[in-house]
Image (cartoon, rainbow, N blue to C red; front, side, top):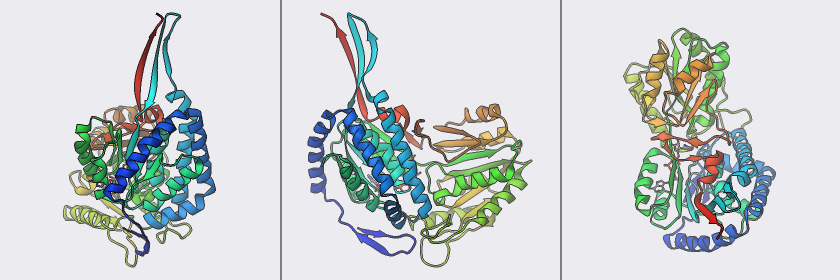
Length: 455
Ligand code: NAD
């Protein structure tokens, strides 16, 4: 399995994919190791995870360099990702005692009732490449804190980072065998679906997620899915600083080259501010530095996957053939690297591919609407339900709209944002279950209800 730098198209490493028999050996080791890990107790596990968090800080520059070399994101965004992952890890270990300890419900002389949160056992985490640290720690950190062992299959586009995570967890004190990496692509993932894990935790596309859900259904174990989105954003007519709104929302659409599950993917703008917004938006997009991800100040670098260029080309062609107007970008950049120009389309309609299918790249469609009712109708017109965002001077107005959009997250005057204390969850084609928050800590446990009656 070759690891290719998407910015230079050079092979930077060659790795051996795990064979079926190696995966089975790893599972046997995980099963044994998990029992010991569960026994050492929560406070000891917290110490180990704190140590991992410290090591991420110490090793940040090196890890960011490796991440950039295999996924192509600007180096500063790789550093930001590690910082963001650390903030999440800290929230998790600071709240682990509160949410993973036994919970007293009745406590009288004669009767005690409490809930214990027991580890599931060995869980399987099949992960994505776009934020390997962020989406990784959402799963394996709370799973480890709760006393599980983890088989972690990084995306084939983030294997080097997966191996670094394994090394660092070991160095931090996670005992041998408790966390193991499975190397490979979809075929390796398929093999994992045939094995007996106590739960499957997947981050990736709707297509793969739906397939995994069907494949593991008969096992009757938890199967959690964090999938894609087509996140809408509405700019109302009462926003004050239109330039700031345009800059903030452009960042929400294009950060990480648009390869974020919660990237802004569709923009609806009230007709009263439409022209001003579009011109400020395009000005912002044209101001970005495009180049090699290792160059200082670069905001748009290479896409991670070459195949995505075809998806983006198709969305542009489909939009233009149906009457859209191209205001910026629209094609692959010449030269080495999987680069695509930041692309802004207006005059789009909601049935175009660019407004319905997840783009996962540096492209946005902007549409003019006449009022809130039209904006709401269009925002709701999607099979996905990850996030939705409204920019307006009025909280009531935002709440009125957001409460009617069937999404796991609602944003007022912000977008493309995740908080460790809030559940991260998608609805409909965006997923099932939640990571982060108290839910994300407890999702790696099974409850036992204790009824203790004095005899
Ligand atoms: P993907 O579905 O192509 O792959 C995800 C993982 O599944 C990879 O590890 C891959 O090797 C594995 N896989 C592929 N086929 C498999 C199979 N048949 N059986 C088992 N495993 C298999 O997704 P991707 O390209 O890595 O990630 C991008 C997608 O992830 C986007 O849709 C994005 O929106 C979504 N995503 C969602 C979240 C979230 O929190 N909701 C976060 C990040 C990314």
